[in-house]
Amino acid sequence: MTQVRRFWPLLTGTHRYDKSLSTRGRGAGQIIEAPILAYLIETANGRILYDVGCDYAKISDPVKRAHYYENLAFAFGPPQMSEEQRLTHRLAALGLQPVDVDLVFIGHLHFDHGGGLRDMAHAEIHVHANEWQAAHEPADTAYFPDDYADDYRWRFARSEYELVPGVRAIESPGHTAGHMSLFVELPKGAPILIAGDAADLAENLDDEVAPGLCWRDREDLALSSIRKLKKLAHETGAGLWPNHDMAFYRRCLPFPEHYE
Image (tube, rainbow, N blue to C red; front, side, top):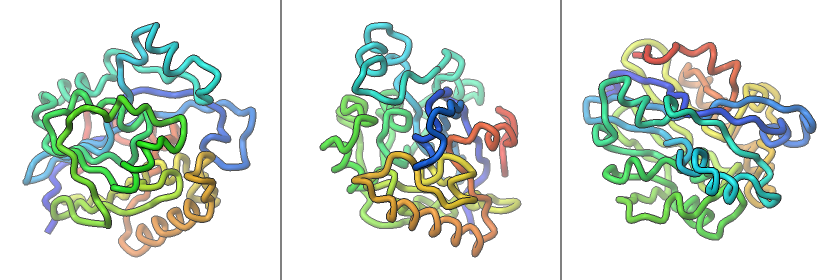
């Protein structure tokens, strides 16, 4: 039986960029606005956070912003993140503090998914071992090594596993070397399968289009993960959630409402 009690999608910022970064070989020249999301899962055995968004200091401080985002080597451009959208403020709106989160599950360590780790230094941090290795190369310019350089309580996954009953880590590499999705079995209604950046947009799922950025150009690996997630969603009746699709996000329950 699932231990999940409640589930919230949390908007922690937005990002405007060329659509071809989300859909490989499509959308060049088309600028889209994408949500930067984290997901809070309350269980009978504590609280789990999937992803932590960006490092607010790198966006709000003009010097850091220029260094990390406003340079020719970084193709993505700076994200937008208000004080209200900070993860700490989203938690506060629910009557919580960062210390009330017990486990942080990082789908992958790109800047918009692992940047907020400093606010969660107390928690156990889960990431795939292959992701950890790729992040330390670093495999691409979307990794900011100082995001994950502190002395955190790391746990390195090497396969799929159950975090708690009703919450399962799903391997979905391709976008990055050790990308992980998350299957969440709600106490009522259909399960939710968080694709993470295995599928930025509904279009990635519907048309089976790989993300624009693929680890070592392994488009085949990314497509295999998309098909794996679609198959799992079909077999379990789960809703399959793309991660950076603004239209999809706007159809979700508005914060601070939750799923159960």
